[in-house]
Length: 600
Image (cartoon, rainbow, N blue to C red; front, top):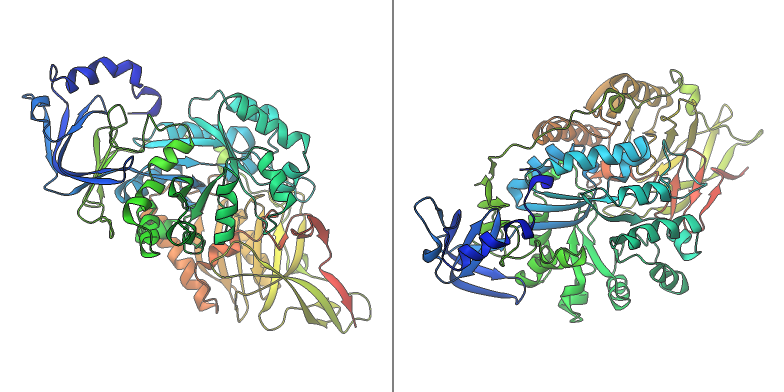
């Protein structure tokens, strides 16, 4: 049943009342479970749940009076009955999957609600891309709400995107049925400086009574942070420390603590609850970015809840952070997030609240997964042809396109270098003394080359710089058309000829990720939809993504989830230093900087 066909509470209120009063039989009764009540943080044994029209009509100690000859009875057998899990902030495109395939991947893990920000495709296809994601999301058997992207480009003047999102686009999208709010407001300097465009987008969302998502990626908790909060963002997921979490919640924001494929920010912030004793209702769990390998092998929001519990959080508090807290934040407390009358019957049966095995999943009153296997269709949108032809390089690239010419007479140069930090989104701004060979600055040691290749308009532009931290050895290159958020093409390599081979290969297949070494392709993930997503099942994409991981390791890289680090090196709103199609960018000062600062 699609979202736009799912009955609203007013449509079925009379039927829910009739079931609760015992005058009409329920469609389904879950019998003999332990009711996890996230409103009161209680576990109540020997309870039943009666369901009608996909919604909960009754929860109590005996629903036998709600049963009729046609009522389906599900025996909980003493297992815990918990609400379906909610992901408060995420990007479907980061899974390299369409909304349909992402839903198929996470439903067996107990995720029944997602709040998604498709700003990746917005940078490639503009408002049309957002609408396509929104429309496929509404077709799914679980709840996928869309946040209208706010920042494309993420930082005006520092990058060039395929399309630009405007306040008029935001105002138009606010009327779409699945739009829940404004996506993360990444241009935090713009908000703090009262940029008219940013404030117009926030105003459009607030006039529509929608939630404004935040993204304050700065350690500065002084006047800039105060100005950002005054600008209207209601939550933030960029915190990395206890102080960040406390500062946000004290100012009335929700602190969204993320555990993605490469971002491990729960452990460092949850002490605000577990040790400082802050009210956990101001805290929310999310994933932000999960690639297909994590989804297939490790889980989704169940993984985040388990991790929070491992970090010392009470299991019931952790569940609140992944259910009712999220629903309340988005104004949906009367619709989902708890197992109480009127809400959507999104129910998980599990035998252990700490380990959280997902044994049965129900969404909107329908069993959608059982014992880890999905048993419901996830319909696909018919994506238009032009969504599959978004890689435009302008010309076939050569090794010379990746040269970094040194000043005349230089024997060595002092270069600004992007320093990758394992398991964190921020980078370090480093400097390195690098050799000059035949007039070209060359990488040395752990420093190799990085390039951003323009791929939206076919300009032929290539920005070249240096990066360290991957540990690559030999003659290799890795290229990806997933390059948050502008989504040009990022190429990292130790050899310019391999960099050209990798870039041209992605143009040939319509986008994706590839690794070359010594002229041979070691691994490839095709991502033909906008150069960001595959429409293949998650298990197949995950298998190809694993080949990428293995190829990176074969080339000397042992970073955890290094691909995610690779894909974020162009995100010019997260400190300290990034690459764009225009130049290197110092994100602590939001200004362009040269690759070569000096020479000898």
